[in-house]
Every structure is written in structure tokens, then in C-alpha cells.
Amino acid sequence: MYDRITRERILALVAQGRSLNSVSRRTGISRYAIRSWQTRIEPLSRATQCPRCEAVPRPPAATHAYAYLLGLYLGDGCLSRQPRRHGYVLRIACADAWPGLIVACREAVKAVRPANSACIVQREGCVMVTSYSHHWLCLFPQHGPGKKHERPIVLAPWQQQIVDDHPWEFLRGLIHSDGCRITNWATRTVAGKRKRYEYPRYFFTNRSTDIIGLCTDTLDAVGVEWKPARQSRTAQNISVARKASVALMDRHIGPKY
Image (cartoon, rainbow, N blue to C red; front, side):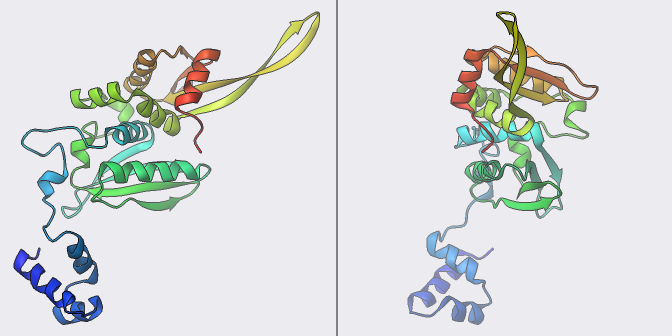
């Protein structure tokens, strides 16, 4: 960490018309650091970067983006403890089939933690949107030992308030991570003839009873009718099939890009 006097001295050399390369070689300070000082000479305080680490905790500034990111995290995300230098790493799995989802996930990460980068790590069939920060644990207190479906998942009061304020963004994150919109078909008899018809339907699948409950509670809050769907041995499913409710979901959630 360089003090303000050093920063002012370096910027004075640049102001004399010297290139960033020459100043960097002369001082041993990276061009990236010098360029950042041209925009902001005062260092960012780590304490004030995280809205949960301040004396009076407050929600993240981009609450709409956080609500979406929370849904993605509960569906296909995880936190991992990293060496002391990095703190925690947030990883959210996004299928290669949905490139727009990858973009939306990265944008949400950057909106919530603008001081941190959001990189992509390719895996077989998917990418991991990855971001390092000392403060991810502050923003996702649901993290703990073991898998999410094996431990209680309860929102903190400030998180619940964000979900109440932005229910559709939260649902959008859940559906984009562990949900889908499909077209079902069925047959019925009309005038003595069997006819096939199609209808759209939303599904949400998760192994955690608590996360399923968060989804259904939020659906109830926005007036979407849902019902339990066929359960598998490892996961629980809910379905939205009523025409008016599907139309409401289409209006606010839409496809995974």
C-alpha cells in the first residue's frame, strides 16, 4: 500500500508528460496502479467496500442485482474458503447452452461487488462465474460446512427485506439456476376425436426443502399459483401451469437467454 505522498509524487511525474511505461520502470510501480491513481488517488477502504462490515450494517447498494444473485447462489452457487489473501471465492455454475445467462450472472456480480472482478472458468458443459472477495461471506451468510440441502437455509432479515422489495428478481435467479420453462403436450377428446394440444409450464427443482420453501413463499407473494410436481429420489419439484400464472412469469422472468 502506497501512501498519498508517494501517489502524488508519481502522478506529478506523469503530469510532466512522461509515459506510464517510463514512470513504471523508474519507480517500480505497476502501470495498472498508476492508471488507477489517475482516477482515484485515495485508496478504497476495505471496511466501507462491504455494506455488512460497517458499524451500522446496511444492504448492498444494488439490491435488485443482489436479489437476482441470491437466487443464482441458492440454486447453483457455492462459497469456498481461500488462502488469507483472497478470503472467499463465489462460484456460480452456468450452462454453456445459455450464454446470455453467463453475461447476466457476471453483471450481477459486478453490480454487487464493483471493486472485484468476475472471471469465467470453463468446465465440461458449463462455466463457473468466479469472483474473489473477503466479503462474500458477509453477503451470503447461508454458507456453511456441507451441502446446502443438508443444512438449514434461512434468510437474514436484511436479505428477506431485499426479496420482499424485489421478488421477481429473486425468482428470476432461482428459475435461471435450478428452473426451466418447457412446453408440455397432452391429448383430449373433442367431438369423438383425440386431439393433441400443447401448453407452457415452469418447473423449479431443488434438493433443499428450505430453498423450495423460499421459492413457493415468494411465488405466493406475487400471486403465482403453483403445485407440487412429481418428486424424484434426490430432489423436490414444483410446477406453475395455470395460464394466468405462466403469463405472469413470462412477463417478469422470461427465458434463460
